[in-house]
Image (cartoon, rainbow, N blue to C red; front, side, top):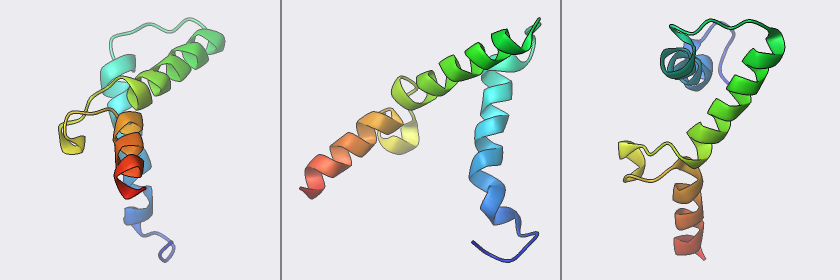
Length: 73
């Protein structure tokens, strides 16, 4: 961690929250906290297990980590 008020610490989380709002939230009417919580949990699962990223050579984050671990072993 760097010094207080250094934005680099928050960059990863702010990027994720921006994607979450852009891909899941905008244009949706959320009626209750339970529905919002369930949608966020579903999005997090999608983000980690299904959503492919070009930066990770076309793999999801879980697939990339598994692949990297197998190469290192």
